[in-house]
Length: 310
Image 1 (tube, rainbow, N blue to C red):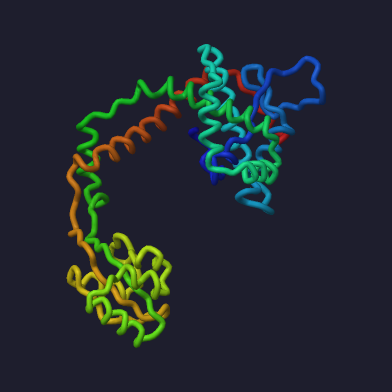
Image 2 (image 1 turned 90 degrees about the vertical axis):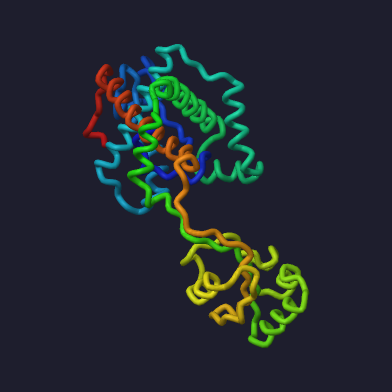
């Protein structure tokens, strides 16, 4: 959603916290003090404080939150109330199939034990969490309906962005390399002689290298300048493709390097990066339209905030 970017989002599971505005009950089961009322629906002070503290302590444990942060968070809850109310006005519902698909998509990343432990760690009841997930999915559904058809990105906008940000798309020269890291100079020289004598670099690296990539035969994948230690960087980008380096000493041992492939520095054509540019422009336009839409909902709404309670 748009305005709660300060809130932590380490996992979807933890992000889905219950935020709720409910009709003010005539006979509440416990005294309910609203911190805000949105079109007649209350955001309960105790519930708000609980949700806020869950989020605040994940990022700023031990510090007293400033008033403007609590107001920012409350605005987010007010926005969610407005969007849920808009879904009701439009008659939008979340089907059980839609919920189950999203639920399973989240659950697949956790074992049963890990999932249960995360809920315990966050003091969240499973049913409470499911209720919140349903709410967030409904919010996403009504937001998509309200905004997606209004977003149009032209070919001209994409081309203008490409021209204005040409440097950002430039790709440096790269090498696909591998290495073996040996404890001593003698071991490194012996390794090099074996490879020059016809033995397989990858197989030798798997059994002799001390590097973390040994199990992959020493494969370092594609590297750009500055991604590895300077002494290795200097050797790699000067080394002819297919040739073995002399042993290079670092604090980690003696490295024998080999360049497998090269890519020259280049700027990709517009056609190559158009999908990425189009997505970025869509995201920017969606955020702009979202803020405008929320402002329209707020202008039509009756909102009362009990500021002394914050």
